[in-house]
Image (cartoon, rainbow, N blue to C red):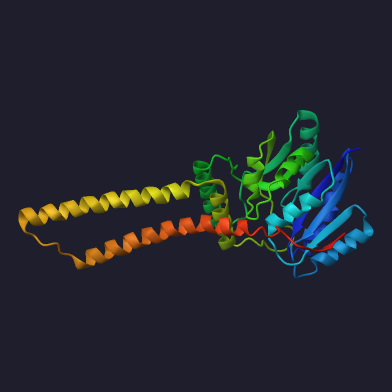
Length: 307
């Protein structure tokens, strides 16, 4: 019998862990696979680790990894996949926004329909603030417009993959990880399951608007160099405009003897061009910072406890 490993990254999810465990067991009964649960404690400050220890003592199929500090969900997913021993590997959120009831259908698609991965995407964003939904959709439109790697709108990290695909993802050792892009970049035949958004069973989301914004910037810089091209184009465009204005004022003064006036307008132009320059430098800085962090070769995560 083949084995299914389920990776569950957690950060301050003390209340949700036992609820997830109970719901998961109800859904996997009857599935033609053995399974293991690989919980990853991403430096939680509550009793999340204690919940893992209780479940491990009750069920030998439950394993856990605890980080020395908070390294982020991307690192937690990587650590879980690295520790997973199954023929198939699933990634799920512990808050039950990723319904375990989809796992049998996912497994059937891989075993009987020839897929390497079955992923999930939300078709609604019920329960989310409208402004977050607006910017989320705008992000997907933007990144798909400037990147060769397709990022499916509403894609979740919740997916079931073959060992071959997981090994391909693990071969990518970059520290600045954007898994939604990495899943697409490695290729493999993927089926998408759609479902409506489900609210958390317990706790609060750890993703603030600011964190999501920074995460989206990471995704854009990781899978597209278009911002660099935009910065270069803006530089050339404003050089042409400046040269044209110089010729205009030169001939205007020569022909009509009209001195160039307008101190406030000059200040506005200088500030505008200065802002464009700083914006372009900021784009360069983002890519340079990514290169700087990658060259350090620091580990993606550090384990404190593992069972």
